[in-house]
Image: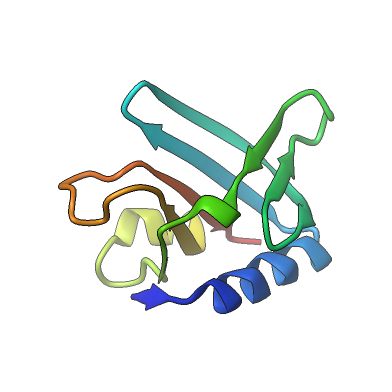
Length: 110
């Protein structure tokens, strides 16, 4: 489901305030990365995710996003639903592309 930037920021700030563990998957034409950590900073321009050992950091430039999507993987993705409660997808570039560059943030079940 499509969501606006304001709703995405509300969700990200909630995850930050609750110190929730998230999975971050980056999918770009030249790189793919997966990391696990907590949201430690949320601004209009960026979101920071840091690993628990403070070694890995992912900076997500949400100010450059072209769109946002939200999902709860219940019936549609039963395997994912066992691990994740919800997910936020941040799209970059042309959203009409078959597989646009994106960053997916998924909230682990507690």
